[in-house]
Length: 271
Image 1 (cartoon, rainbow, N blue to C red):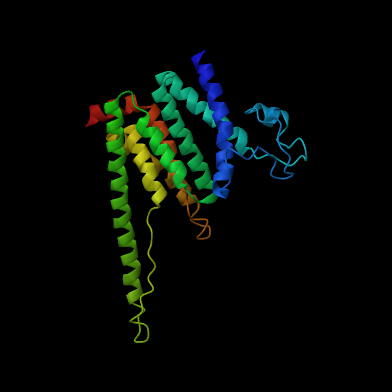
Image 2 (cartoon, rainbow, N blue to C red):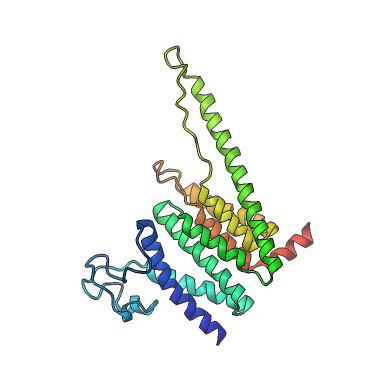
């Protein structure tokens, strides 16, 4: 019965998550504007917002104007249900597991926004960190989560600075070869950002959720997950080559969080 309740909760929050994903990038209110069709602007009825089932019964079309409804809606609702169901099956229904589930839902929203718009809203990032830090079974656990969040936020910040400095310096040295007496006093080398600030905040959430050892595993796993995609997009334009990294960080974090016990066993047996 608990798992059914968790699944229903996940589906319901997934429906709200779709609103967040759609409106946050547009700087619209996620609370005070009623749900409506973005094609004909008609306000939706309550039975139009039943997670999964409404999209199926409406056959993926608006009941007023027959405009297509993105398949993103049922997918996000289903993923949210799976997140709640998985965490509840592992830890049961409790306040800490609920907060952890909220953190992963926020990471899911961040992943979708990063994938669609190449942006990572700070408001959602801070919310994910907040839920992750409080998702502990004791006050000492909350303090430990906070320390781990600061540790990885600082570590990623230093890594960002070092990589950005190296890449910018490399471009500068290459540009020296093209200097002439006419332009030798002008330096137009752009600052190359090796990592976005959003990734740093996601790293803080990962640290709070996983701890030090498992976060390092998740970072390595996220790189492995992203590598095939990065190789596939190399032939595109410079804009197409920008691969959003937050979805891979979030997916790796969830995988490591769920399979933490066998990963710990492997680490202890081999190191």
